[in-house]
Length: 148
Image (cartoon, rainbow, N blue to C red; front, side, top):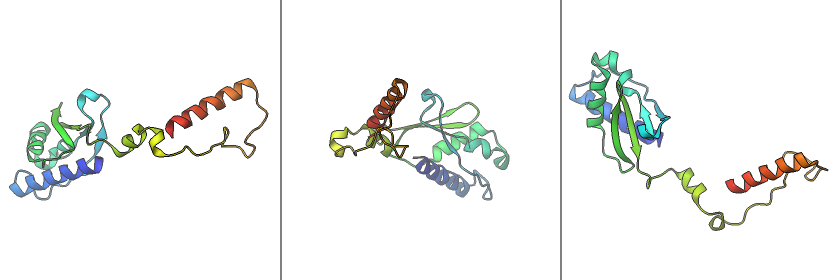
C-alpha cells in the first residue's frame, strides 16, 4: 500500500513539474508513514514540507496543489491536509491489505493446522515441566494457534 501511495505522489509531483508549478529540478524522497492516530487517516506523507525550499512556497500551499494533482485511485477514499502540510490518506477498507485478509480468514477454510510441538525451541519437545513453565507453554501454544 505504501508503494501505491508513493507512486500516486510521484505522479502528482511530475504533473506539477510539467505544469511549471514546481521547478523541473525539484526532487524529493517520498516517505509514507502510518499515522499514530486513526482520526488522521491510515497513512501520512510529508512530501510538501520536503519540497518547500525547492519550490520557495509554504508547505500547505504545495500540499493543496499536490492533492489536486493526485490521480484517482480505487484504494484511496479520501485525502486531507493536516497541520503545516501533512497529506493524510484514508484507505478504503474493502481494498484492504492482503495480510489482514489472510488473518481474518477462518482457520477451517485455510486447511488443517500443522502439527507443532508445544515447545518448538528445544530439541526435547516434551521435557519435565513445572507448573509455571507449563502455563507459559500453554499461552504460547494458544497464541500460535490464533496466528494459524
